[in-house]
Amino acid sequence: MEYYLIMKRYIFILSLLFLQSCLKPDEVENKSHVVKSMGETVAKQYSDIPHLSIEQMQSLEKDTYILVDIRSLPEIEISYIPNSLTQKKFEQELPNFQGKKVIVYSTLGPRSSKYVRLLREKKIDAYNLKEGILGWAHRKLPLLENGKETLRLHVYTDAYNFTPSGYEGVYK
Image (cartoon, rainbow, N blue to C red; front, side, top):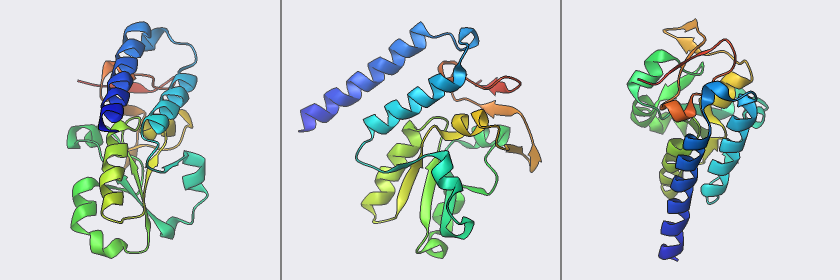
């Protein structure tokens, strides 16, 4: 079983490397489709945890969940989803969130999926936000930088620079 999981991860990493080498983000016409496909790939790779689409999250009552941004501080300083907490703040205030769903996001989902797995091992009702902040941007939902709307988005790496038209992808 452990061998199977190692091979599954190896194939996933190779797939992402292959995707990066084949796709040049600035040459892709339908970036939204690529983001959706990558979100589906992450959901399959981390099939042992639950994933919520952005639309599913939006249908929830706002007081029933907490949104957690797992990305690094330099990424968050570029932009973040409104009303999200950093991982550090979430962990500091964890006792305050009893009985709430914890929805975690990253750029596309691998990092947030790993964190969701850890939270679920601690019996926390956690979910990965499928497509992450890139999917959020493709739906033209607001992003904030220091409390003000922005069209800048940290994409983690050039391979993930599938920002929608009019947005600036930052990755350095």
